[in-house]
Length: 289
Image 1 (cartoon, rainbow, N blue to C red):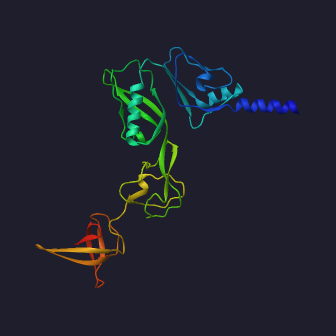
Image 2: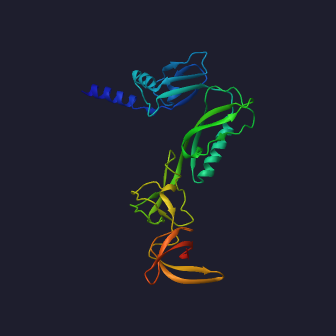
Image 3: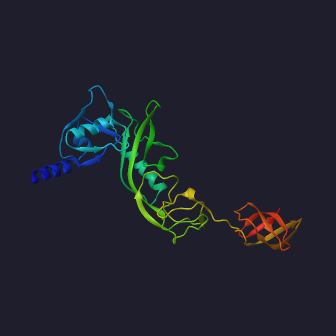
């Protein structure tokens, strides 16, 4: 019984050494070993051999996972379907990493970047010195993506990148109702892995008053699309109504029956209960239409 327990524990701890398989790897030698994929793998064994004439190689992630399993180890393929191996070139990729870092810090000043990996998409022998990476407009919306560099012939050479980072993001600290005003009382900062957000996450409270477009559950990351500017005229508030007749401007007080942002057309109710249309021209100020 004791021997069985020892064997069980040994198998458990060996197979428990589990890392997540990446989508891209570089190689210098055609033989790929377990330690090339998992730095602290308890066993070193050959995983595959890339043909000598190949500078790029693609293999099903499940084949790699099965090879680890047969050798008493474990690697998690995660959401990766295929693994790409690219021969290591002599390119200095550090300038591109710096350009990526600058782009992300510009978009998210409070981001904490742990590591940036850049991979050539296919083997690239050389590119012009001082090359500038060309990023898509939404390059900072995700923790991985692509960019390109123009080579000597003006041909686009594509690169993949991934970024390991954390970001202080404003979260709801209670249940939020629609049209509730965002404040430090109903939100708090929380450090989360930077992956993908459906909108730009807030890393600071907005300078101008904002309210929620929708209800949120507690502990939900707050992104820009959940918010809208607070209307400068609220429903039921008293407004100063301007009526211009030539050079003469007459003002009177009415009640807004609708809320409105700057230049919105809303309905107001006069003291005689008659209603009219008016354009919002300032805070609690409208112009009769």
